[in-house]
Length: 115
Image 1 (tube, rainbow, N blue to C red):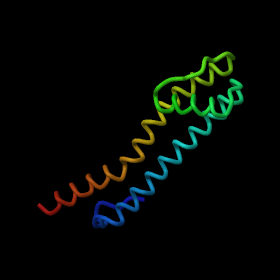
Image 2 (image 1 turned 90 degrees about the vertical axis):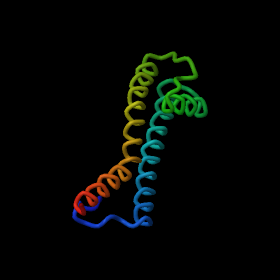
Image 3 (image 1 turned 180 degrees about the vertical axis):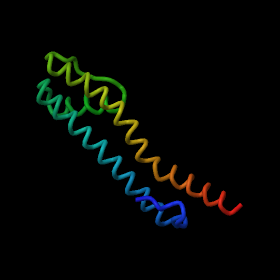
Image 4 (image 1 turned 90 degrees about the horizontal axis):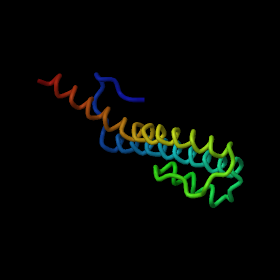
């Protein structure tokens, strides 16, 4: 996936394409997590689709739930979904920053070999 330290640095165009792929992967992770949250709220808490979307979006965004939860299953789901959402935030940031970090380290390593 990433070039070896002995390989030359990618061109700017190739790097931007790689960065776009990683952004799309992070977006896929976020959308998948949002769908999971909407389904959980809809089926476990019997919220309408739009209310389930609002609750899932707010928790995934770190804001907290909007609707009051009435069922034990819904409360358990909300608890685990909130913990999961915090981890997903960190994972998606890591996925987005991985190519940038690799490029920085690769460039730094190439400069060290030149000197």
